[in-house]
Length: 190
Image (cartoon, rainbow, N blue to C red; front, top):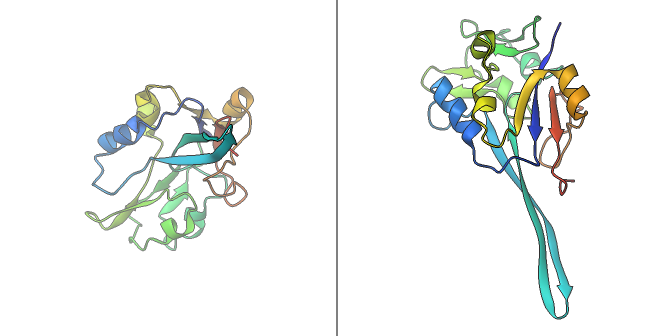
């Protein structure tokens, strides 16, 4: 089985949210429903030098969606089996015919991947744009990024190419669900 994953390059992401807009547009998402989100992290301090305070503050951004985890908490927490992980590519999906909109999946997911859609009364989430991938295209978020801060592919290939970092400030511990992401952390990130 091939497991798909995302690469997130914090060095390049400028927080423009083009990935968020492309995802919302492609999936025709309602206000408040965001399969992909961009989080801002700031850190640093001020240094006193020659009776002046010099700022040493950095800000970096992390674009995150469903991480199609090895051990998805949303799947474990779903009482109807609507949340499931496809065998052929590891993509975590919602079977709308089984979903009752109980929201247990979002309560269990440490990344906020599943999103409740008020209009249909059911859970929705990133499906990795498998319809676009099947046509040989990039997921909407990857294709829209002007900085090329996002990439996708088989997680084994991404890890060979970019490394194995998946824990950075602002994200839950990867030990919880073993997310299929690789992050090039900003040089100022802890």
